[in-house]
Length: 362
Image (cartoon, rainbow, N blue to C red; front, side):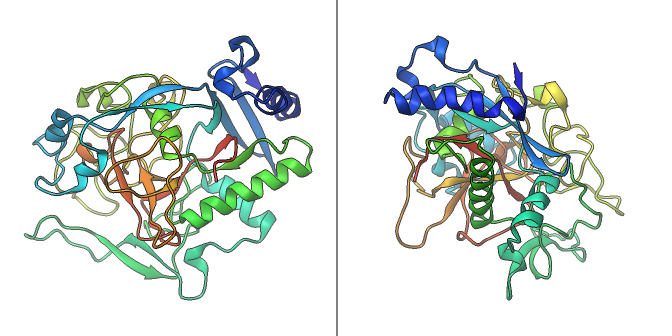
């Protein structure tokens, strides 16, 4: 079911009636009163730019990975660095969790065109563009050496979401990158205020970053404890996601080093949002949940594993990012993969975000 922005206020009012006026959580409301799973809303951002969100009902899932999955990730096919602590961030084993409230989630990451509308209308300045701001970008002077692993990323001033230093312009249909947790939070606040001013959003809901639990629940698309949202077999990922594969870097006769998916996904760097169409969407209709760009979420990082409720620390917060990116080996682009950023203002040409519409979480 698709719902245009002209019907937006009606649908949200119905949802608020369930979640607020009746004073019951979404998971306690009669199923027939909730939007159907997969219902979509087209949010008008102005200037012929829109943003699509998809309804995901409340439910249960298991967060994290098994020892067998971690072993695969650091094995020959997965290609992740063995012997490190990175996989321990996923927790010792999958833990049962419940997403108590239904929510709407962007079908794709926020795109360059959508983020540009936010900047144009609000006048916001991203962290990378502020005086003294920097962002992690591809080093055009990088060469493959005998040292492993070779990381072609450097901190550069003067680069931002407007120019991530890929060597080619990012069109409006690409996911926005070089944006921070702060920038994602600001986008959500802007969209919330905009929709309330237009009379299309009540106080009981807001646009925000998804919680870590919402993100992994949405990523898995109804499957339980699989490596990827389609299952465990890497070869079934061909034509579904953008990671390190057999694609030449621009102007070079080389591909990304280390382990690669044994096919071409069409892009050495980031691919346009929803590039793979229906085949690239999971059981909830979410596109690009693995690979593409890391997606920054609402929670702060706990190295022991993710949480069912929003996890926040008061000192030295490190936002969580999920899902892997176009440079990652297959073992680093699974549903359970999670890392902590350096801080709320950190940005990177491998990082973006996805917007969520739900009850306030902080």
